[in-house]
Image 1: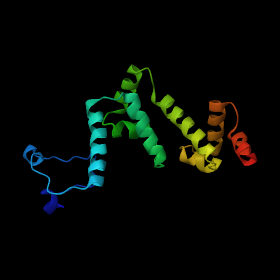
Image 2: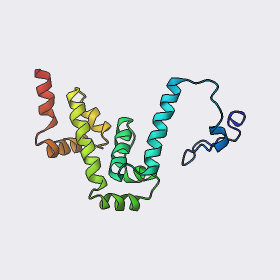
Image 3: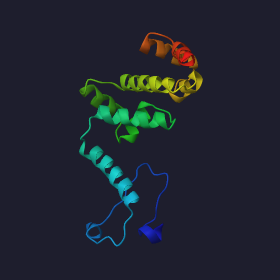
Image 4: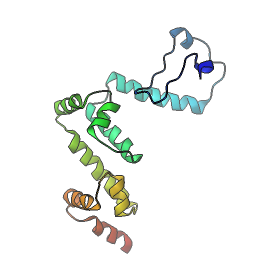
Length: 161
């Protein structure tokens, strides 16, 4: 890595960073790859919007929660606040300024994901684990609170169709 990048690379660091001298950005591109360009451009736009603060804290938190749920990673205020580069207290304060809170956002995303996954026929036990519930009974209670009926009613309706 030192030959390629000119510096040692540290893995398992708390953050990612690439520093490029301004002179290097002015050099002509000898060859290019449109696929790589698209990936880099997309990631750069995402990071730039995070830096510029164009999206609200609420939107950033939702996005991070969705990413973690989709990749079956645990979700907590500590993990989300760390991924946003702020303390848990700062996250709570910023969400409160936007008339929101972490628990409500997490619950809302779980609800949306539960509805999508049940429509696809995912089993209740695997969906429960996927959404981060420790027990399937906790998922049942949350589902009934969200939709007013048990998730089994949806499963039965799908097997009839």
